[in-house]
Amino acid sequence: MDTYDVAIVGYGPVGQLLSILLGQRGYRVAALERFPAAYPLPRAVHLDHEIARILQSVDLRSDRDPVIEPYDDWYEWRNAAGKTLLKVDWRGVGPSWWHTSNFFSQPELERELDLRVQKQPSVSVLRGRNVTGLQQDLNGVTVTASMTNDPDEGEQRVRARYVVGCDGANSVVRGIAGLPMTDVGFPFDWLILDMIPNEPMRFEPPAWQLCDPARPTTIVPGGPGRRRWEFMALPGEDIQDLNSADKAWELLQPWGLTPDNAALERHAVYRFQARWANQWRQGRILIAGDAAHLMPPFAGQGMCAGLRDVNNLAWKLDLALRHQGDDRVLDSYGPERTPHVRHFIELSMQLGRVICVPDAADAEARDEAMIAAMNDPSLAPPPPDPPRLGPGILAVDDAAAGVLSIQSRVAHDGREGLFDDVVGHGWFVLSTKSVPPLSAQAQATMDRLGGRTLTVGGFGAADAADAADAADADVDVDLVDIDGRYASWFDELKADAVVIRPDFYVYAALSDVEDVDAALTALGRQLPAAPMVTT
Ligand SMILES: Cc1cc2nc3c(=O)[nH]c(=O)nc-3n(C[C@H](O)[C@H](O)[C@H](O)COP(=O)(O)OP(=O)(O)OC[C@H]3O[C@@H](n4cnc5c(N)ncnc54)[C@H](O)[C@@H]3O)c2cc1C
Image 1 (cartoon, protein in one colour):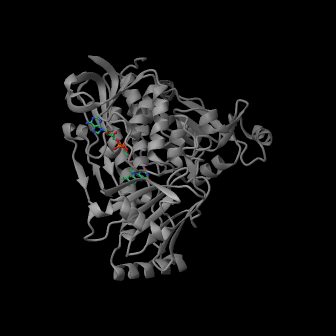
Image 2: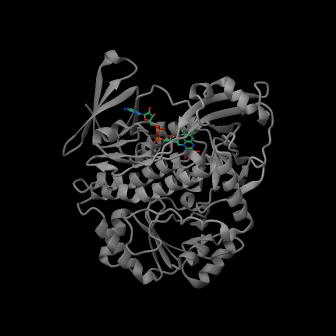
Image 3: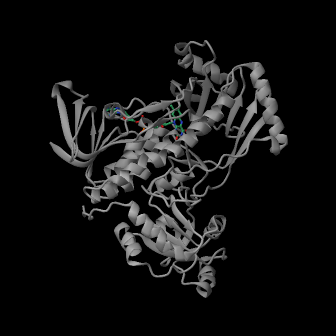
């Protein structure tokens, strides 16, 4: 029986990303996928700046790879009469430096991720394996899969120290592990169309929602060369009739699309859902992505949430695999991710409740309230707090612990560029002042994690050379803050030092560099105690 460090069940985008993240760390990984080829149906089209930064870490970049199209415009909601109900500013870049919103076609993104998996020598992609059984013992898990390409081949068994179920909404792994879900339901059916126009077409704005009770409709980019239309099924409408090419062309006609000027690449009807797992780990078995949560797609965040899951899990699995015998760090995975993902589930449902209104009187009342709030912002609901991780490997009683850090351009060691490109990945103490020498305990934590302490300064200078001159006067600077964004961020946090985790989330923000030592000592106590084993 072949043995691996981690067996990943399901090779959708979430299983693919985890395969790369573990392969980059040198782990032996088997990714078992029931289908012989990639899933071809239309699904995700939108990802945000944080996900673009995660993709940067696997060398998939919207500034180079044409599969991702950065968006630089408003996202608008209008009523049936064409009046604006809401305008969301999606222009420019977000805190992670990448664009706030980006569009892509999921099958193309999966193809790009697959190419990067193939470059990992320690990762085996085993297609045509339908996982049917998991047998867990003290040392690992035996995974049983039936061979879907050729049932006569019988079954295959592999052995792994951990199994991660990235096997989608109907997760077999979740079922076998008995991980319970909370299901709050969101029972709306939508027809999803992926279109390839064969002549230039302009839409103003390029991404918008038509909140028309006669047919709520989403009109957004669908990735390079594509457009996406989504039409809500009306009460009592026959789903079979709706999910046909004829109906698709009928619905597209008012939008100027015909078989003469566009190709209908795919159509599918989905029933949206809203649910999350109450527990994400059962011993050596964990779940991620759609296996752990589902949300309606109105915020474009379902896959994004799954990619965040495995960006959180990868460094914890790394610690668990290196500290044989103490894998309590994995206990923090579900509790950290649950409130974060619930933030997006609730946001998606709130948006859906505004959009999915098929009743004319209800729609009129909604329009009145939203137009009033457009005219008088004091009537608008307050913007939601930023999403934040739940309790886990985070400093306690720290207002910034669990929020996303930023990425900006830096100059370092004679190179200029984005932080991750120039400095790399891992644990960092970033500070605006020199950090005093660490105690033995704090230093031991940094050594175990391979953490680095870097001072950042020279804020807001016209160019890197200027910045270096300015910074030299103040403090011995390791990183020049080319755009002054780190300066603004430290100001916002009222911090002189920030401890940042490998998944880009803040562990602690400290108003005094003297407190770095205590924060690292506390971090050390939250991490595995057993001796480290090199892989
Ligand atoms: C209409 C629509 C629009 C969407 N829009 C967006 C968007 O704009 N932005 C966004 O972020 N998200 C969006 N999403 C959500 C996004 O598509 C999903 O969240 C994402 O595909 C989940 O990825 P995953 O890898 O977790 O699961 P999946 O993509 O479902 O992959 C799971 C894989 O596991 C395999 N598998 C299942 N069972 C087994 C088994 N027993 N053995 C072996 N293999 C198995 C499956 O064959 C599949 O390949 C949208 C979804 C829909 C339906």
